[in-house]
Length: 274
Image: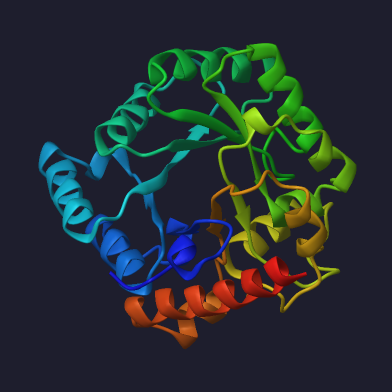
């Protein structure tokens, strides 16, 4: 495997978020991250498509490439009773040795979100972290709301996931980042984006931007440097540059992953030197 993250002498492990190549197979996600030199891969799981054979194939690829998983995603909480498929995503994550589960909530009942996440935290049995991501197009819209929910659950397996784009679009402040307990932060998702960008009052525009409109680190207007300076030392950074431009310009998955690593590594080297 090529040198990446810590192997470059960088202060943070670099992780390839699964969203940069939505067309990739689970094995391709592992192999492309490894060839590009990332320290971790992210894994998208559609439970209906995963069998015992899928788990075995992914584990074999991980072992061959020496490529661990930073997370599995996405547990998307909905109104109503708990979804057994969410338990399955957590279980698959544990089988693969992933460090985190990424969760978002579209349940307007905050109590329901608390109960469902608390159940997942218990299911995790200390083997994996359950991370709540906030965003204006979900029902947990701000970092303050996410922190309130994690505080209410009060479970050591619970954490908050900060996505730089969602944090900025939702009006998050550097003071709120500074106030986050280190033990709530397992990893962070960084990218850049135009600023101003999507209208915070338009949920569909925000979702479209999150899926298609991100830009390379340092090429937009998000306050990434000040945000990075407030994060715990050595925290893993998942590069979440979900971008139509990136997909169109780099249709080859390996070339896309390599470009993502090149730009992200250069940005982190600049920040580490400051």
